Image (tube, rainbow, N blue to C red; front, side, top):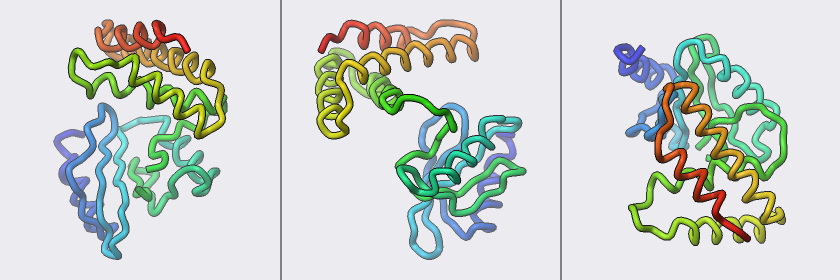
Length: 180
């Protein structure tokens, strides 16, 4: 599919009258911001073949219908492509659970972006406190679900790649070391 990706992008640019920008750096799906002919900011998402989560993502977005998430602008379900409004949530899983769990992804991602030596724990504590204040969530629940999310991410990586990656381990350790 990677050989065909540039052709798929061109196909959807023409079909949906959009101009894509450089893609976000992700590991599974192709996701790129784009501008539509009517100047709306949108996101083109092309899923990899046989991605069984793609259908549930579309169903979740339709269920929320823009309430706390983006809307689907256009879709090609059969070929795994969708044009979305640009970010509240572009990768929903259609899973029901505690709201605090969703913050875990946000709280584990910054470790990738900060140089060695950054005070990651202080950054994370400040973010947890801000989320707690702004959203009315309990600080401890945010922290605990973030740790759980980091461990799940580590396990998913192990499942997919068959080895532990140090950054996933370090991330879980750092979140486990935080006390609030």
